[in-house]
Length: 431
Image (cartoon, rainbow, N blue to C red; front, side, top):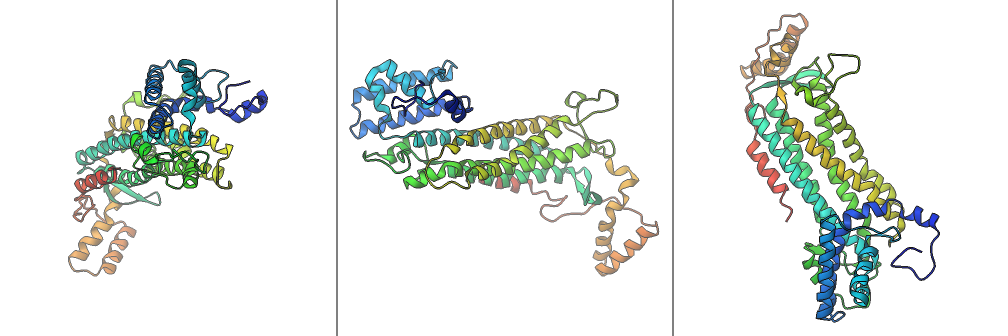
């Protein structure tokens, strides 16, 4: 029979236990340090309301510190016959300090215990993502300034359209990340609420000081209503999935651009050979495998929100074992977004820009709108200017003047990078 917190002497069959536990034991390892942190706050609160003596608090606190140290050193092990991380921590305490260890669960349920662990974990993951996004943002802004005067063809419907610039291209994705940061901040606010004290979803008869544990655990506020605290299970994960899905969409589109721009038919950008891959039979190939993997992994991340919604969408309030599967869905997606943010930045540190793209006659028609606008500024009605340039294009007499005179906010000549940076740092202030 396994060591379970809920065991009353009757064992589940191995088949049932294997099916219901699934990968939870492996995934729980990421929550171990947060489980200890939650327990340390909980016992301080129990002592404050008279359920532990000061001496008992000191004994438990010291031993929890020892367990936390073992976790940080990689020495903490979830034993084969122990169901989950919560059971393992309580079991170790009981072995090491005796009957006092059994008091640690007073006023708690595994429901609010795992909620605390997950919310603390997700807050840390969001903060890690925030820093990664800020780093990539700075890289894109630096590239935008460096190449602000290098023109680049712009496309609509996959057709040559109007002049763009590398400054616009890099800077546009930088600002897109600022919008993603607003989403990330929203997810942080959802996660930054303390569920401890909600127990199994209906509170309990102990006079718990939930304000105290909220402060000790560093939460901005609490989930006040105990049912609302349990309703946050799934909703918090979905909020995080939505935020990282927004980042993934930005990275996905950027990766698609890079795959296209690396193609010799375009030749807008390139990377050192060691950052590309070759073909088994075609000696000339320099494949954009990194960007293709970023694109594919980001598609997977974007699917996470929908998968969570489908899992959680038909359950009444209260805990259900289905929620255990959330970790299987969200945890791998978080690792993917970390990997993709890192690799995008790594590739951009080595990007090479073709500064002579527009020398080719292929891009003469890129400047038709510039010519229409020039004639309009000289006094010709816009529709007449449009028609006259169109006729020149049709009869092959159009001559391109390959210059641009864009001055309005956000255009080629006025990138507004400083203002975009201000926008990002407002979005990135989670407090």
